[in-house]
Length: 298
Image (cartoon, rainbow, N blue to C red):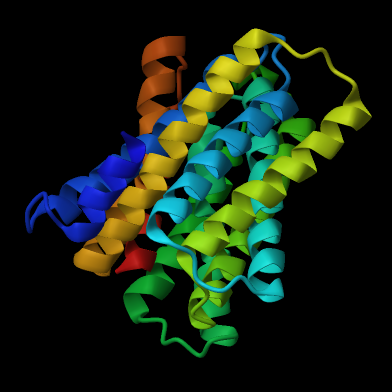
């Protein structure tokens, strides 16, 4: 079924305007995965095991797609870059889950999403891409919004429970992991490396990294971890296939802002499911951070 969906999307058999729906589907898939990470935090489930099943499922599905469509020549560079992307992504997801346990997801997710500052700046410095005035405004808005969102007043004025220091540490690690990941993804695009081979290397390298970590942590394996991890792997891969389809057939200046709003899924879902309460200035900070993300993509 998955391969059938991919083949239809690749051939453009669902209509000329499907790239818009594909971008929305990507946004929903990535946001849903992050919301699942929030929902499973503090439930006694191993973050490493869930991520391992996540990567293993996506690896097998991607490998199956490659076997159907055929492979381009694998190179050492593709394997190294893809594996690094997988490891960084796995680490970012684990750190994000830990951050969810220390603070509200409605603040954590938008704050981590501002990592787009790193690949935008690297595009100008390393790849000599032009950054427009609007994008610079977006970068400044995101940095200012990040400062507003993470600010928590003294105990007498505190409505949101945040274990501040460990929460901020996990947020920063996830922020830089995803930011560097974006730089590596841009590098792979610049070098015109095959996308399918990159995904296979990414999911395969990430799964191996997580398996090694599982031997180190020696946590108990639970059946629930397999079910949730496999489900997330399917969602993630469908999201990325839709992402590539949208970028290949639509306008990137519209696709990127749509996909970047995945953090909004976590914000709305967290407030709805967990009744998280935010101060007015934090609500403004969240929406201006999302605005900054959109501006950097225009």
